[in-house]
Length: 76
Image 1 (tube, one colour):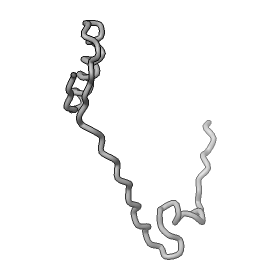
Image 2: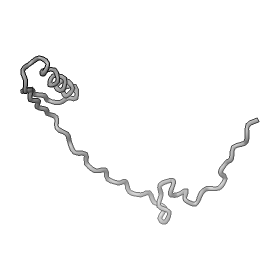
Image 3: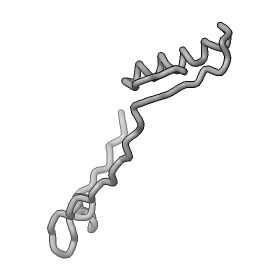
Image 4: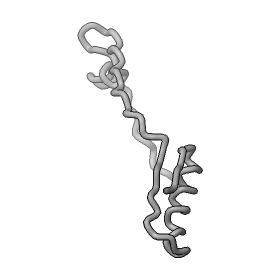
Protein backbone atom coordinates (compact mmCIF):
# COMPACT_ATOMS: atom_id res chain seq x y z
CA UNK A 1 0.00 0.00 0.00
CA UNK A 2 1.53 3.38 -1.03
CA UNK A 3 2.30 5.99 1.62
CA UNK A 4 -0.09 8.97 1.77
CA UNK A 5 1.25 12.20 0.30
CA UNK A 6 1.65 15.28 2.46
CA UNK A 7 -0.54 18.24 1.54
CA UNK A 8 -0.11 21.92 2.26
CA UNK A 9 -3.24 23.22 3.96
CA UNK A 10 -1.86 26.63 4.97
CA UNK A 11 -0.92 29.34 2.48
CA UNK A 12 2.70 30.46 3.02
CA UNK A 13 3.31 34.03 4.18
CA UNK A 14 5.12 34.97 1.00
CA UNK A 15 2.34 33.66 -1.26
CA UNK A 16 1.76 37.15 -2.66
CA UNK A 17 5.43 37.32 -3.60
CA UNK A 18 5.09 33.99 -5.36
CA UNK A 19 2.15 35.39 -7.35
CA UNK A 20 4.24 38.38 -8.43
CA UNK A 21 2.36 41.05 -6.48
CA UNK A 22 3.78 43.68 -4.18
CA UNK A 23 3.03 42.67 -0.58
CA UNK A 24 2.45 46.27 0.58
CA UNK A 25 0.25 47.74 -2.16
CA UNK A 26 -1.07 44.51 -3.68
CA UNK A 27 -0.41 45.75 -7.21
CA UNK A 28 1.35 43.99 -10.05
CA UNK A 29 4.92 45.21 -10.73
CA UNK A 30 5.59 47.10 -13.96
CA UNK A 31 7.27 45.00 -16.67
CA UNK A 32 10.99 45.58 -17.09
CA UNK A 33 12.20 46.92 -20.43
CA UNK A 34 14.42 44.51 -22.32
CA UNK A 35 17.73 45.87 -23.67
CA UNK A 36 18.02 46.31 -27.41
CA UNK A 37 19.93 43.54 -29.16
CA UNK A 38 22.55 44.93 -31.54
CA UNK A 39 21.94 44.06 -35.15
CA UNK A 40 24.46 41.82 -36.83
CA UNK A 41 25.95 42.41 -40.25
CA UNK A 42 24.16 40.83 -43.21
CA UNK A 43 27.12 41.00 -45.58
CA UNK A 44 30.31 38.94 -45.74
CA UNK A 45 33.41 39.47 -47.86
CA UNK A 46 35.93 36.63 -48.13
CA UNK A 47 39.41 37.10 -49.57
CA UNK A 48 40.72 33.96 -51.26
CA UNK A 49 44.49 34.44 -51.14
CA UNK A 50 45.54 31.35 -53.13
CA UNK A 51 44.31 30.20 -56.51
CA UNK A 52 44.71 26.45 -56.04
CA UNK A 53 41.75 24.12 -55.87
CA UNK A 54 42.62 22.94 -52.32
CA UNK A 55 42.69 26.54 -51.10
CA UNK A 56 39.36 27.33 -52.81
CA UNK A 57 37.26 24.92 -50.74
CA UNK A 58 37.30 26.82 -47.39
CA UNK A 59 36.07 30.14 -48.86
CA UNK A 60 33.32 28.33 -50.76
CA UNK A 61 32.23 26.42 -47.66
CA UNK A 62 32.12 29.64 -45.61
CA UNK A 63 30.25 31.42 -48.40
CA UNK A 64 27.69 28.62 -48.67
CA UNK A 65 27.04 28.67 -44.91
CA UNK A 66 26.68 32.46 -44.90
CA UNK A 67 24.33 32.37 -47.90
CA UNK A 68 22.20 29.78 -46.09
CA UNK A 69 21.88 32.32 -43.26
CA UNK A 70 20.50 34.96 -45.68
CA UNK A 71 23.73 36.92 -45.92
CA UNK A 72 25.14 38.67 -49.00
CA UNK A 73 28.48 37.02 -49.77
CA UNK A 74 31.33 38.21 -51.97
CA UNK A 75 34.53 36.24 -52.63
CA UNK A 76 37.57 38.18 -53.88
